[in-house]
Image 1: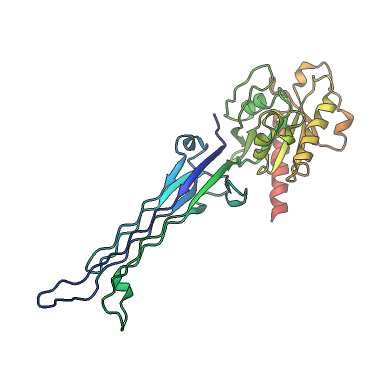
Image 2: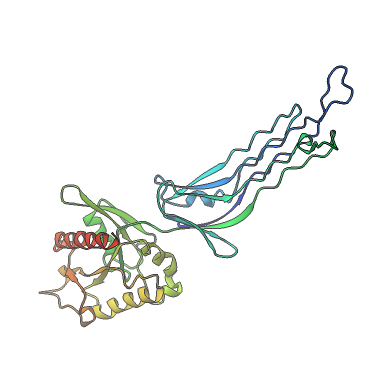
Length: 329
């Protein structure tokens, strides 16, 4: 199961205390100060790692804390700095301040880092306070506390192509036929409850990543049917396949419903390059008719069950992706 949201508390390590100490030497009854500084506390660092695909670990690790700095010692010994707590998250994780909703970082590439909570500075020992007028200070500092913050993690899958449509439009079956992915498939709505990624091979060395997203329902942009959670994963896709079951009683209305939800959700989804796909054409007799609502759209007819139109669909996707890459240059 894909876990794509998590709320955690992060705390930087406290700084170590400075030391108050004086030299003790033979025949020197009042040696000078030699208390060392405390070490700095460690930071909590989030790092995007390719080997991670879910936020499941954070269901069991709600509080992440870095190591505290060690206290300073006599003979001007500085305390060791605390170790950073380096936490791996999936590539595509957005980090937000849980209280304000401010986006702190978008870790959208491997190796991207965010210092989520800085460690406290180590306190100064009494040797640091020696002056020409105060050669034997008794003052020292305690270490500063580390930063504390509650953050929300949101995973947005990174894929080239997003498959969207109403429940039971045939998205999972299509992905299973054009890639090695094996999503759960059944002949009833809401079989897919979390996004599934599949690598689609095309030609000798060409490939692209497609994401099968759970079915949308009317009102998804308002959060109905966990719509916000599912639509979030389309934000990073370069293009969309809008699937409509050709055996639907009103395929034109189904297509309009999906477009309305994409438009209402915003984030430029309705303007994203797309291909309209009439699926399950093996279930109707003769040549399927294209609904008026799809006029002006690039429409392809496919049957995942028989393989009809799948090669043409992959060729059209590759062409559109290439055009999209050129537009970004």
